[in-house]
Amino acid sequence: MSALAVLLPGFEGTELPAWADAALRDGMGGVCLFAENIASPSQLRALTDAIRAANPHALIAIDEEGGDVTRLHAATGSPYPGNALLGRIDDHDLTARVGRSVARELRAAGVNLNFAPDADINSNPDNPVIGVRSFGSDPEAVSAHVATWTAAHEREGVAVSAKHFPGHGDTAQDSHLALPVVDLPAEELRERELRPFLAAAQAGARSIMTSHVLLPRLDPDRPATFSPAILQGVLRGELGYEGVIVSDALDMVGASGEIGIPAAAVRAIAAGCDLLCIGTKNTGEQMAEIAAALDAAVADGSLPAERLLDAVARTRALADSVAPPLPIPALDEPVPAFDLDRGIAAFDIGDDVVLEPGARILTLETVANIAVGASPWGPAAAGAETTPVFEGDAIDVTGTAALIVGKANHRHAWTRAVIDRAREQNPSVVVVDMGWPSPDRAYADIATFGASRYAGQALLRLLGAGR
Image: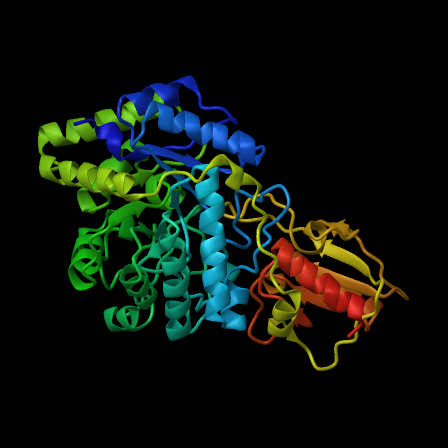
């Protein structure tokens, strides 16, 4: 048994590096792909073919949520509505269509594990990392759409990994950068946060991803990824989940910021994780160090050998359960077109909003969170000519028909200041929020609940209609 079997690293470049090829041949569990690994559909398929040649049992994972978080469409923006907009449209046939289409794209590319759907309930409008990645804020509705998306995706043969257990929606911090705390009573967690994960499990989710979030009412000392009480007690015990438990990336501050990745890997496996997502730009030296730490922990008894054996067995069973890639001609299948009017009807548009066709579009360019990354968004992704506005830039919209477009406008002091200044210069300026808006909509005359290319196209159609 090789401890490499539970590791799922990332790597740099569009070709399989020699260290990853060697590690896969030695039994490494698989790899996780990111936008930087993708140049074209044919290149991606050649890459995944090389991975399978090195290890026919490799799990090839990616984050393809079908909205703001996209890897396949990172160069152009996603053609899908995204979860929050799907939740507002509330058509389960459409949600299933999206889940099915995403899976077919991935299977054609040779990817067999998708870190999606996001099963978090976005109950905190100031959440910096979930927002429109969630189907909404109502537990029942979110659970229903998670189940629909999961079932449709799984039927295409590509495994899902519902995330981020037991819920990252009620936080105001990003676990990439800190250790968020969700201090809710256990009963409230069960009634709200856990429901979508139970729904995903019942819909056939072959894996569930953990969160690096501290839930002191369940475990006062350890974040979920490192908590036997949460992973073994709640997920395995209370929810009865038997699939693979995947850690969120261990290079995140919420996981390894104080202890380092090798120690985090040991803690995660000991707690109940079966497969470890390591990060993005990993190296062979790192994998050797992590595997050595796992082996040393088994040798000194701090990690029971049977726990590591169980993790390896579950991971291998998952790899053996996924469907083989589709024939190469499937790479040329276009993504289905989605009705833009359905999206427009789900926008939140103020009663007094007046749009002028041909209005100048200014985009507020805030720093994208790490999960989203740098990708075209909104009207620019849809092909519109826009004027980017960065922190510190001065604008003048006096006497000009203008659209000010941002994401989660209320969350940034400088975007609020720009919008306030624009409204002083021109009271007829229209402000669009393509993220998750504040409850009072103070900085959102129009809220689109998503910034994918699809949402940008719908916004442009609305603008062209001059509502």
